[in-house]
Length: 116
Length: 114
Image (tube, rainbow over all chains, first blue to last red; front, side, top):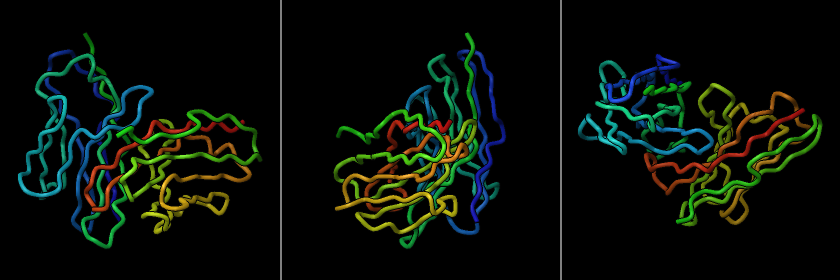
């Protein structure tokens, strides 16, 4: 069975500081990895995803993530955050393979609170 | 591309009543997913359609829940004899046909069972 663990439920940070949101996963098969963001009263929006190739993935709004297979991690980073980055961030995985449905398994979420 | 839409956005009902939610996916997407999100948690998978065929259901989906996707277009999720534990945000997502394709989420339907 797959599982996703987001190690921090809340991350407070000051504006213009760097931030890292941590994600670890457990799976017996190869996975695709995703980060979604949920702004207040809005739907989930894809930030970035890792399918294959380069382990450093760049996404929207200046975010990037690095896939580390040996540590089964996919941490999200941004070098300088803005007030507008305040939101809930979700890490998710899905099975690789043509016989799979593509369903997403999500972590519990991390609330990023950017303070002025 | 008008995005994924869901209706209604909010639903308040009394325990024991039946409710039905609708999801309209992005038009060329043949995959459709339903998820449920409770407060402070990540979304949990409920069920998956490829075109009109329901190919996977989670154990979370009790026999009070039923979903359909007639003609492979919009989908409905019905909950019969609602319970207070059904209170949650119900999310719909759609994607193209390949694993790894981005799932686009609708705004959700927030259900409150009194």
